Length: 201
Image (cartoon, rainbow, N blue to C red; front, side):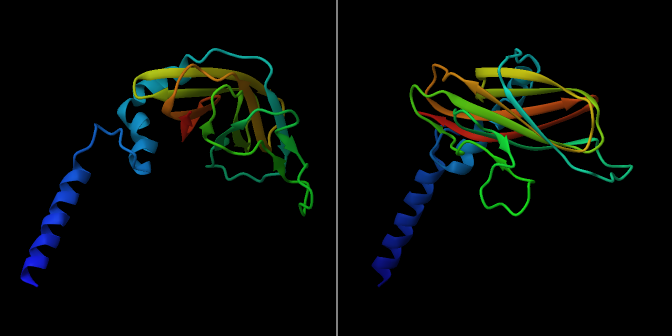
Protein backbone atom coordinates (compact mmCIF):
# COMPACT_ATOMS: atom_id res chain seq x y z
CA UNK A 1 0.00 0.00 0.00
CA UNK A 2 2.86 2.34 0.82
CA UNK A 3 4.48 1.77 -2.58
CA UNK A 4 1.16 2.59 -4.30
CA UNK A 5 0.83 5.84 -2.34
CA UNK A 6 4.38 6.91 -3.31
CA UNK A 7 3.75 6.05 -6.96
CA UNK A 8 0.51 8.09 -6.94
CA UNK A 9 2.32 11.04 -5.37
CA UNK A 10 5.07 10.79 -7.99
CA UNK A 11 2.49 10.72 -10.80
CA UNK A 12 0.75 13.74 -9.27
CA UNK A 13 4.04 15.70 -9.09
CA UNK A 14 4.91 14.81 -12.70
CA UNK A 15 1.44 15.84 -13.88
CA UNK A 16 1.65 19.12 -11.95
CA UNK A 17 5.07 19.91 -13.41
CA UNK A 18 3.84 19.12 -16.92
CA UNK A 19 0.87 21.44 -16.42
CA UNK A 20 3.15 24.25 -15.26
CA UNK A 21 5.56 23.97 -18.19
CA UNK A 22 3.72 26.09 -20.76
CA UNK A 23 4.65 27.75 -24.01
CA UNK A 24 4.37 31.36 -22.92
CA UNK A 25 0.58 31.65 -22.77
CA UNK A 26 -0.16 29.83 -26.01
CA UNK A 27 -1.39 26.57 -24.48
CA UNK A 28 -4.70 24.94 -25.21
CA UNK A 29 -6.41 26.03 -22.01
CA UNK A 30 -9.45 28.13 -23.01
CA UNK A 31 -8.91 30.44 -20.04
CA UNK A 32 -5.38 31.22 -21.25
CA UNK A 33 -5.95 31.38 -24.99
CA UNK A 34 -9.17 33.41 -24.73
CA UNK A 35 -7.54 36.22 -22.78
CA UNK A 36 -3.89 35.85 -23.79
CA UNK A 37 -3.67 38.19 -26.80
CA UNK A 38 -5.61 41.01 -25.12
CA UNK A 39 -3.65 40.72 -21.87
CA UNK A 40 -0.30 40.53 -23.67
CA UNK A 41 -0.72 43.66 -25.81
CA UNK A 42 -3.58 45.98 -24.74
CA UNK A 43 -1.82 48.95 -26.34
CA UNK A 44 -1.89 47.14 -29.71
CA UNK A 45 -5.65 46.60 -29.41
CA UNK A 46 -6.23 50.24 -28.41
CA UNK A 47 -4.09 51.57 -31.28
CA UNK A 48 -5.79 49.28 -33.83
CA UNK A 49 -9.25 50.42 -32.70
CA UNK A 50 -8.28 54.10 -32.75
CA UNK A 51 -6.79 53.91 -36.25
CA UNK A 52 -9.34 51.51 -37.79
CA UNK A 53 -10.18 52.66 -41.34
CA UNK A 54 -13.79 53.49 -42.14
CA UNK A 55 -15.68 51.03 -44.33
CA UNK A 56 -18.93 51.32 -46.28
CA UNK A 57 -21.78 48.91 -46.76
CA UNK A 58 -22.64 48.01 -43.19
CA UNK A 59 -26.16 47.29 -42.00
CA UNK A 60 -27.65 49.44 -39.23
CA UNK A 61 -30.81 48.79 -37.25
CA UNK A 62 -32.21 50.97 -34.48
CA UNK A 63 -34.99 50.02 -32.10
CA UNK A 64 -36.47 53.09 -30.43
CA UNK A 65 -37.55 52.57 -26.83
CA UNK A 66 -38.74 55.09 -24.27
CA UNK A 67 -36.32 55.58 -21.38
CA UNK A 68 -36.47 57.72 -18.24
CA UNK A 69 -32.73 57.96 -17.60
CA UNK A 70 -31.17 58.56 -14.23
CA UNK A 71 -29.30 61.88 -14.21
CA UNK A 72 -26.08 60.05 -13.30
CA UNK A 73 -26.36 57.30 -15.92
CA UNK A 74 -24.07 57.13 -18.91
CA UNK A 75 -25.70 58.43 -22.11
CA UNK A 76 -24.74 55.19 -23.92
CA UNK A 77 -23.87 51.63 -22.83
CA UNK A 78 -22.16 49.05 -25.01
CA UNK A 79 -24.11 45.76 -25.27
CA UNK A 80 -22.00 43.23 -27.16
CA UNK A 81 -19.68 42.39 -30.04
CA UNK A 82 -20.51 39.27 -32.07
CA UNK A 83 -19.47 37.42 -35.21
CA UNK A 84 -20.69 34.71 -37.54
CA UNK A 85 -21.06 33.76 -41.22
CA UNK A 86 -22.02 36.67 -43.49
CA UNK A 87 -25.51 36.41 -44.95
CA UNK A 88 -28.20 38.69 -46.34
CA UNK A 89 -31.09 39.95 -44.23
CA UNK A 90 -29.37 40.14 -40.87
CA UNK A 91 -29.21 41.81 -38.52
CA UNK A 92 -32.94 42.49 -38.51
CA UNK A 93 -35.47 43.86 -36.06
CA UNK A 94 -38.84 42.36 -35.12
CA UNK A 95 -38.00 39.28 -37.18
CA UNK A 96 -38.05 36.45 -34.64
CA UNK A 97 -41.03 34.13 -35.29
CA UNK A 98 -43.05 33.56 -32.15
CA UNK A 99 -41.45 36.36 -30.11
CA UNK A 100 -43.87 37.82 -27.58
CA UNK A 101 -43.14 41.44 -28.54
CA UNK A 102 -41.62 43.47 -31.36
CA UNK A 103 -38.55 44.13 -29.19
CA UNK A 104 -36.37 41.41 -30.76
CA UNK A 105 -33.52 41.05 -33.24
CA UNK A 106 -32.18 38.44 -35.63
CA UNK A 107 -28.44 37.84 -36.05
CA UNK A 108 -26.37 35.50 -38.13
CA UNK A 109 -25.59 32.32 -36.23
CA UNK A 110 -22.89 33.13 -33.68
CA UNK A 111 -19.67 31.28 -34.36
CA UNK A 112 -16.20 32.39 -33.36
CA UNK A 113 -14.55 29.63 -35.43
CA UNK A 114 -13.88 31.01 -38.91
CA UNK A 115 -13.36 28.41 -41.66
CA UNK A 116 -10.93 28.98 -44.51
CA UNK A 117 -12.33 31.08 -47.35
CA UNK A 118 -15.47 32.34 -45.57
CA UNK A 119 -16.72 35.93 -45.45
CA UNK A 120 -17.60 36.88 -41.89
CA UNK A 121 -20.06 39.31 -40.32
CA UNK A 122 -19.01 41.37 -37.30
CA UNK A 123 -21.68 43.12 -35.21
CA UNK A 124 -21.60 45.68 -32.43
CA UNK A 125 -24.56 46.81 -30.35
CA UNK A 126 -25.08 49.55 -27.80
CA UNK A 127 -27.94 51.08 -25.84
CA UNK A 128 -28.61 54.77 -26.48
CA UNK A 129 -30.10 56.14 -23.28
CA UNK A 130 -29.90 59.89 -23.90
CA UNK A 131 -27.31 60.59 -26.62
CA UNK A 132 -27.81 62.43 -29.93
CA UNK A 133 -24.95 62.93 -32.36
CA UNK A 134 -22.17 61.00 -34.07
CA UNK A 135 -20.86 57.66 -32.87
CA UNK A 136 -17.81 55.79 -34.13
CA UNK A 137 -17.88 52.01 -33.98
CA UNK A 138 -14.57 50.22 -34.43
CA UNK A 139 -13.51 46.57 -34.59
CA UNK A 140 -9.99 45.14 -34.30
CA UNK A 141 -8.81 41.56 -34.64
CA UNK A 142 -5.44 41.01 -33.01
CA UNK A 143 -3.18 38.24 -31.81
CA UNK A 144 -0.53 39.36 -29.35
CA UNK A 145 1.22 42.29 -31.06
CA UNK A 146 -0.11 41.41 -34.52
CA UNK A 147 -3.04 43.37 -35.97
CA UNK A 148 -4.91 40.98 -38.26
CA UNK A 149 -7.72 43.34 -39.34
CA UNK A 150 -9.37 46.58 -38.24
CA UNK A 151 -12.32 48.59 -39.56
CA UNK A 152 -14.82 51.20 -38.39
CA UNK A 153 -18.13 52.89 -39.19
CA UNK A 154 -19.62 56.25 -38.20
CA UNK A 155 -23.29 56.67 -37.31
CA UNK A 156 -25.34 59.82 -36.75
CA UNK A 157 -28.06 59.42 -34.11
CA UNK A 158 -30.75 62.07 -34.59
CA UNK A 159 -32.86 60.95 -31.62
CA UNK A 160 -32.14 59.08 -28.40
CA UNK A 161 -33.69 56.14 -26.59
CA UNK A 162 -33.36 52.52 -27.66
CA UNK A 163 -30.68 50.19 -28.94
CA UNK A 164 -28.44 50.32 -31.99
CA UNK A 165 -27.01 47.33 -33.85
CA UNK A 166 -24.52 47.64 -36.69
CA UNK A 167 -22.97 44.84 -38.74
CA UNK A 168 -20.16 44.74 -41.30
CA UNK A 169 -19.19 41.88 -43.64
CA UNK A 170 -15.45 41.27 -44.05
CA UNK A 171 -13.41 38.98 -46.25
CA UNK A 172 -11.30 36.54 -44.29
CA UNK A 173 -7.79 37.84 -43.58
CA UNK A 174 -4.75 35.76 -44.46
CA UNK A 175 -4.30 34.37 -40.96
CA UNK A 176 -4.66 31.07 -39.13
CA UNK A 177 -4.80 30.57 -35.37
CA UNK A 178 -6.20 32.17 -32.22
CA UNK A 179 -7.12 35.84 -32.07
CA UNK A 180 -9.14 38.38 -30.11
CA UNK A 181 -12.03 40.40 -31.51
CA UNK A 182 -12.42 43.81 -29.86
CA UNK A 183 -15.31 46.18 -30.43
CA UNK A 184 -15.26 49.83 -29.38
CA UNK A 185 -18.03 52.42 -29.27
CA UNK A 186 -17.28 56.15 -29.04
CA UNK A 187 -20.28 58.49 -28.75
CA UNK A 188 -19.26 62.02 -27.80
CA UNK A 189 -17.04 61.74 -24.72
CA UNK A 190 -18.21 58.20 -23.85
CA UNK A 191 -15.99 55.31 -24.94
CA UNK A 192 -16.54 51.65 -24.07
CA UNK A 193 -15.03 48.38 -25.35
CA UNK A 194 -15.82 44.65 -25.30
CA UNK A 195 -13.82 41.61 -26.44
CA UNK A 196 -14.38 38.02 -27.56
CA UNK A 197 -12.06 35.17 -28.64
CA UNK A 198 -11.77 34.05 -32.28
CA UNK A 199 -10.18 31.06 -33.96
CA UNK A 200 -9.25 31.14 -37.67
CA UNK A 201 -8.99 27.70 -39.28
